[in-house]
Image 1 (cartoon, helix red, strand yellow):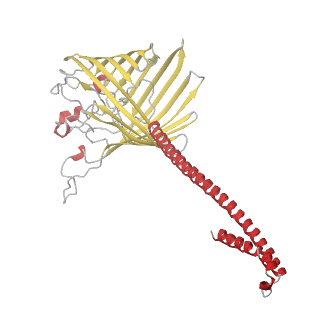
Image 2 (tube, rainbow, N blue to C red):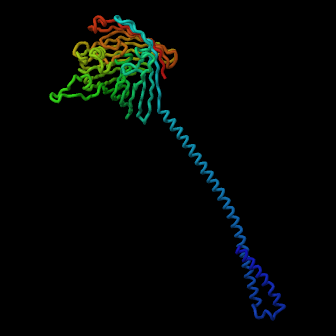
Image 3 (cartoon, one colour):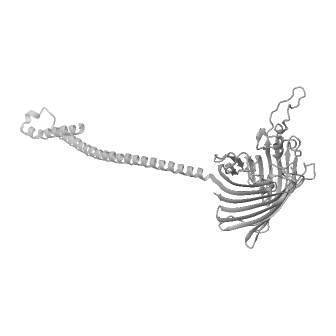
Length: 478
């Protein structure tokens, strides 16, 4: 506005000045005392130049105003675009966060593996001196394994059954428990760590941590020992070492004068463990044929003079019930185990194919160096043709087993063969068929002789008493 006012003032001045020469010509006397004509002409020229300069400045101002308006418009567009960009980036960040959350959730799910099985069993038992027993039993197990980090995992499995370490079966309509809810307990809970390739360390309640051949029944399949183990595998060679707790080292009362315990607390005061080491080799002859041989030594530290470690009647058990819980092993007058168990064990398994079917032949032998009698050897051998796994596959097998009285730790031996006792021998016949994948129908028939040496009772349990047990199983896995 000031530039425009100045230009207007200059223009008026120029207009006035432009009339001065004419006025001077008509009135010479009146202008003789003022500026000369040349001075006025020069002044006029200066004012004209100034007007042109002001006009140029005005044009420049107008151009700058236009450019400024454009810049403002461009700045507005840029700010709008930046705001849109910010919104877009925020949306992309939110989408990325949601995607990462989904990926993390997927990773978590992929680190969890679920497994389980269900079995319904019809069982018939016949003995010479007892009435026939008929019962229906079921077993259900559900577990998961969670990957914690590379090489580190935790496994947890629940199973039916009470506290019996050799069985997770539940008998339907069992005496005094008809229609009652069935027990479920922690069957396995252990952590595994793989510090380097070929080495696995396990802590907790775990599956049996040593190699067992074929269908050997020297150790019950339901046994899940508690302790620690290290397993090694390198090419053809493997090794296993383990330490299992059977009972804690408990406190007990001591006579202050003699320094001796005040009661026969050998049944629980002195802790016991079962430790061993195994070395073996698995040699593949071709893709279908291999031979595995392993040698193991195990020692039950603290077993001798200790009562059996699991007694169904608990602390209320009588001496005879305590002794019976030894499952065939020799006991003293108080029911405590008479001998220790220092077993040397040899295992062999041969696998191949015959007429397109899997064929397995196995043998297992053990000798107890802790027994102070001649009843210190156990052995089993058998064959299995076929494998009931994929749809419409089948298997048939036969095995023979003999367990001398103090040959093996009685609370480990199979709970079905010979009624779950040592001092027995006999045959096992197996049949199996898979109508579909993860669905099997099995039949197992035990034809055994109890009390091979001596007699628990000449009347109620005579020497070489006949013992027959038929199991028909319907099984599902997932």
